[in-house]
Image 1: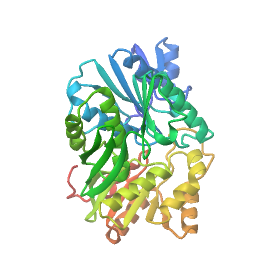
Image 2 (image 1 turned 90 degrees about the vertical axis):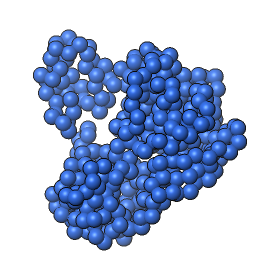
Image 3 (image 1 turned 90 degrees about the horizontal axis):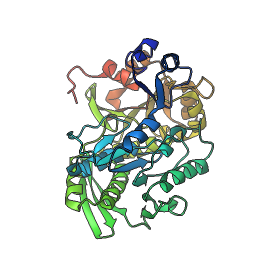
Length: 391
């Protein structure tokens, strides 16, 4: 059950053998309370994933503050000849088939340190930055959690900037300028790119079907993990080329008043900057960003960061999505005021009025990006051209 698709009700769990819940669900949730009343076992999703992983021959787990879903999807595509089972925090648009039972590729989330349930054979840590400020107080705490996660693995694949702090149980592979793998050339090519990676076997070139330098950096980690597992470069290259993205990751969703419309999950200042750079790499110069902040507490922590990124573009701010927590922190009006104070062109509106403003403003822009990790997609049907393709 999901808050966005029917809501939570006590009757949903009656007759169940097991209730698996997201870490964002509070312990006083009506479904958890009913499960306890009925004597039904409850486990958090991270623990359930770790239990499932123990049933497979090998496990590759992808962690990091940014890029987990995309990199895990890339990796599953690169390793598809091994028929992996796969677990992502998003919807994968690639080929599907039956799993062999020998390999699991999983996204391991750091929220509430859920990744620490996982004891992967190969642990991937993409990056480390302060996020989830309701359970981490500093970037050092984030790095320490990733270090513990990596230490449970046989091999860890980590950024070269973290290789002294984050290490695998027996071996560590570093990725970056001074590492064994690195992106040394990036050339945008329509909605994708052509890239060259440094590897232990020399320079290897790949074609990616997803845009942005950040996706090229994700792909380096996928290559390093796939090679560590034992895949050859030909099958890795084919898998990366065939990967066209996960839902809500720079995903074309149609058009608004004839202007291309994208759905974008970016909900951290660093992710917002990366996605804006990706739009530039695709040739868009005048974006209209429709942004929905994620929790009041988190917005308060990152208010300056979001304002700095959004002050350079025209933006419409939607009401804060309350995935969890209370109203303490910043509001969408606070963010809009901060952006305007930095010289940005910004308004904060309710969903219905925001839809009207987006349709009015779209012709003056060359792309519309609906961004955030909440229910911001609800605005897309309100602004979508009737003649838009169903993409």
